[in-house]
Amino acid sequence: MTSEIPAPDRVVAGEPRTGARALVDLLLKPLAFVGISGVGWLIDLGTFLVLTEGVGWAGSVSNIVSSALGIVFVFAASHGHLFGGNAEDRGAHFTAYVLYQVLLVGGVSLAIDAIVDATGVLPIVAKLVLTPVTISINYVVLSRIARWSPSSRRS
Image 1 (cartoon, rainbow, N blue to C red):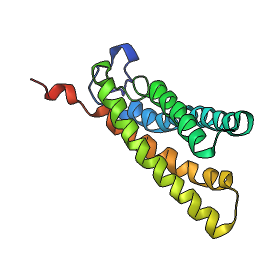
Image 2: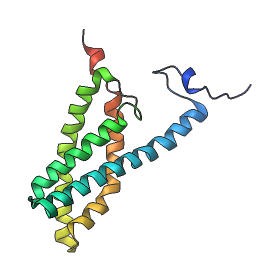
Image 3: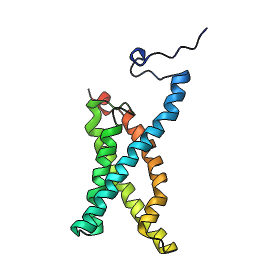
């Protein structure tokens, strides 16, 4: 008896992967998400710096705009391809992800202020310290949102 890994075109959509393929998914998906999130973070940070330093916008307004761009990028790059979210539920998934991100960004903003107040570090240092935590939480939340199927509940 051999343990054959089915070719991607032979894997039936919706069926859980088993064996070696499941292990590969378990290891590679988080790494891929870290890469996607890293690009989203660079979009966020770069836009934030341009708006605050180049254009002269206030930090709070710049953070809302820059965070929104990063959030949209991460969702678009990972929803369907990485997490297998279906197109029919994409709008509901995006809405749920944005609502979650509003809460997360607010909580992280408070945590950044608390770290700065307690330690005296620059806000960017506090943001860097929190980034691995937020990426990990985002991975779990977006992977669960992508599996949620509100369209299957409609009659």
